[in-house]
Image (cartoon, rainbow, N blue to C red; front, side, top):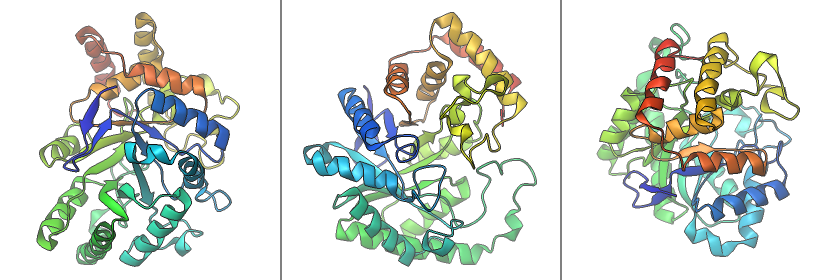
Length: 350
């Protein structure tokens, strides 16, 4: 396992980050325990969770993923100092989480205290803003016309960001969090937070996690270049495009228990002909290498210049084992050329 600096945090994290959003719906406590044991045995030291998890989000299971991780931490306290654990505060839109309110200084403080209690830990290594308060070109809104920046009241947005930063600063001063990061944000969001941090003498964000895969490369190269130059760790989530890149949804297939069989997750905006056509071509490349298309996708993501650590998830030990093996692969220049040909034909799978 290789390790990379997490921005300017002083932390070194494994190039694999164990994602947890299946724990509580698709996975049980016992499953999570097995996944954690396997990941730690593979020298993974990086874990990502969120108050909103598991997904698909709903009121009945809200916070369950943090509770599952917290139960494990309570029984394995000797691992706490060895692990870099991140969680996230949910933003507006979910009525059962603080009445669907936006992220503010007060809501962040409340959310953080609740997350720490569920996780059975005194601190988080990184606390992240799950998504911005303003509409952004994420979650299927990256196509032209899906968002209108002219509708954002910039001064109000910036004042809200100042309020959030003050709460983050208080949390860092108290030791409840050591660093903070962004998620599902844009170059403007990054640049504005950096400017405000410098003005307010508050620690800059150390990381950002955005959706990124062979089917969804909109951050590459522009946002990733900004992250590299500003020493912000870039952390791809959904590097298998919610499972499309495994090939399991080809031909309209919906395997029992898979994510696309759940309400709210039946393909969402990702179930597009171009995504399946591109996946078929990636499968052909993988077959020639005698690896799975999932391993090809993860090995490709790992080698993208500027990627710090890739967030992976699994619903079984077999899946997790296969995914971990992908990070031992080094793709040859000839293979990368073949992948580039597919990327040029299908630059945006969904």
